[in-house]
Length: 225
Image: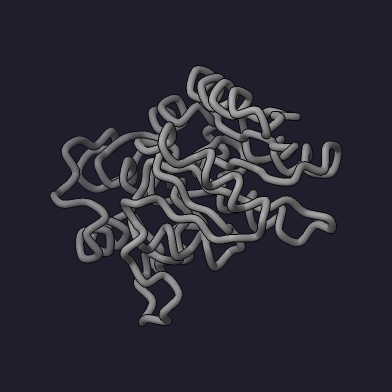
């Protein structure tokens, strides 16, 4: 029996994944987590064979949770579950230690195979990303430095959302949003909102000027000074 922890912050999605895995016959879901910090803690307590880990979660995002889990001994094999098919994010996940990457749209068809492959130490990639060469070293895009949650925070910030709006949308705290904003700005080597907007446009993270600002023409978005 393959012992699995499922880490996914959306309750209904998580329950659907658990039902799918439990119905397979050779998989037992021994724990569930709704945020990255809890996922890391459960590894020590339950010592699963495999963890199915969502990338976009509150408190500690999936990529950071992955980095914390892979240094544990013993540690589970990690299958990333994500809505993102972006090659940069897939590459980040694999380099950080994941052995599987499943796109959420393909969960029903591919997750069972990914979990079984992970248990055997075999790489599994969703069909939507399998054609990419994820192990070839390439010049680093600055966006590669950002976690999926940091990208989301920056995108929403540049679009004009306040820290409070972002925190509510992502179901996290304003303090966490501000930390992710500071970390993203440091990784992108910018020190003010105007530079962040410019870099985000240049890198294609956003495709137009901010549509709304809560701080007027000259000031930073609310709570993000």
